[in-house]
Image 1 (cartoon, rainbow, N blue to C red):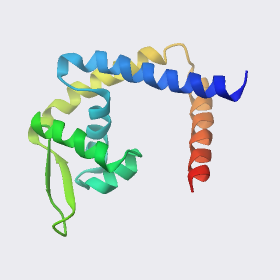
Image 2: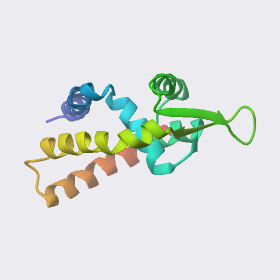
Image 3: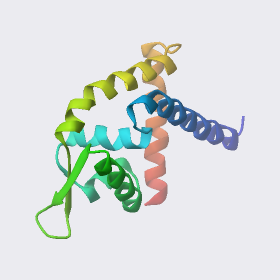
Amino acid sequence: MNSDQLIHLLYQTTRAISQGLNQALTDHGLYSSEWSVIKAIKEKGTISQIMLANYLNIEPAAISKTLVKLEEKGFVERGTGSDKREKKVFLTEKGQSEFPVWEKVVEKHRQAILADLSEEKQNQLYEMVQSIYVNTQKYKD
């Protein structure tokens, strides 16, 4: 196997994971990309839009576009931060109340796609993917 095949498989796998999660979340009016944003806000609490983009390693314009959609759905709100240019993002009451439902759907999806991997293999995979990620950060710096 060469590096192109490995990277191609990683891309295809992440795309398949996103597509499967999109399908699982369809009945809840949510997409996997929106879930990632909601989950990060839930974990971090009220957070600036820039910090959210950095945390998720997503372009600020893409975060902004996703936040507009989540605001339209009533799941998040944006307010002014410490200066007028800074936008703080937080989950609304509706987002907070729906979160446990979405979390169960996501967990069921995660369990299904990792079903054939023992905890030991999952830990090994995590370490390998983490190593690749660290290398990507070194490469772009």
